[in-house]
Image (cartoon, rainbow over all chains, first blue to last red; front, side, top):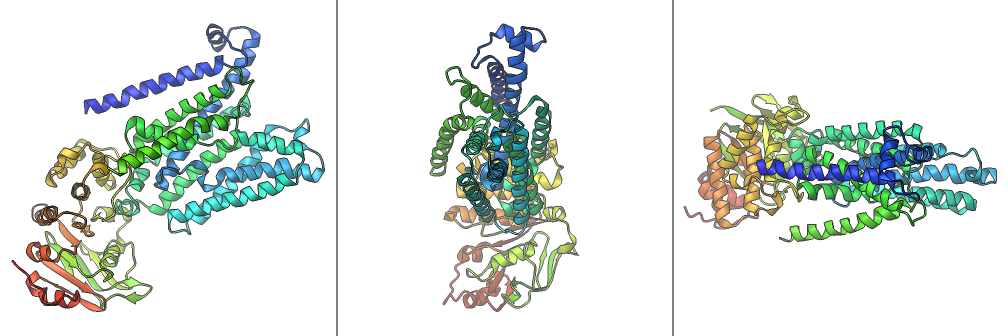
Length: 345
Length: 245
């Protein structure tokens, strides 16, 4: 028992320390490197004006956005993997991010087509329009999935329906792209790269409130999720209302995904890879442990990805999705080989 | 002895098509009954009906004197537990976590385990003889060990009835015998009412107390192995069934 506790506290301590270090590095490193001492004085409310602007107006907001998105994406992915009892499920599996893409495409591309000029070049154009469009698209797909899920008997059918919805949304998006202005397509493509820097200071509070409440809801589902892991028949025999549990899981996961995609664009691989990192680190699948573990590791990984994307020499910002894929894909490959090894024992 | 389960004119099947004539049977406390029949004869359908996941075509199931439908899902979870042929396959599931899930119907939203729950988990793992496996990954166990862990889960669930779907399938011969003895012991010492299906005819003839024999379109026959010997041969289409005791 004592040994077990030891195995929990040591990694937790390391993960939290790494989180703090990564967070501070996110504030220091960038196209301009700010000395640690200066950074600290800015954080306590002093320091030079230029440093203040860079850190408080840009880097701090971006780092907090990355941290929150990392938590939300990872927890959302964990819920999907447990719901489908499939290690390769990720938050985009239900087509929610494709719905968001379609929403953005409609606003960015279609308006440009109708009015005959590139909307994205208009001075009044802001990220808020994109955010709202993505939000609407994601939520429409989420509602559609929720409505269909109660009619579908098996979870495999639900995955297939989700993938088909993603295809439909994708094809409509492509058609829109085909008929659009160059500049608008460019805006859309950039959005698709994903970014943690589109969230304004004033929106940060909303992002934090929604993601943290979604994460708390996910934690409250832990008992149901543990039961789902045993298989549907055992879960039902242990008193679980399957339909309700499935619905709530989709709702919470989809909600997190919708919010994050709206604010940061479709960000891949974090939601897929982090739950595995959490399982390997704590060697557990008990969601009372796994959900918080996934949240903190997701926070670290997103901060790491954001840091790499902003390293000096990359001239500002690398697309965040290329960084998450670069880090996430090897993790997933490792997981696949590990499964094969364990299952063939 | 206390009556635990009674079926009244119970007709089961899919889409209104009854598998066999209506069943009127009872199970008492501490009784263990083996359900035998060829594949597709309706054993699984019967289990599904008894657990409420499939509606009967007609008739009623009474548990502890009340109809099955009158119990809520959580009340059902405290009345009967399941041991199935399909097993959890998550790589990181611990034996402890699986057995602890048996306490879930008795706990709140946070599934907090009390000291008594921990003691019970230990004790029931002891009963099925796998307490040394408590910290192991479930997927790393042998089929026999997995079966005993799932039975420990059912015991921890603390239900008067345990339904087991082919608990001896996939086991080697000594493990099959051991499991049959365990079932008899649980009925006697833990006062469980156990209904289990099996294809191991020879073992059942030796170790079972009572049999329910089913076949398509034929009435269910219940009785001691000796009494239903003739029916088994008939129902399962086995010629010259020889039983060596």
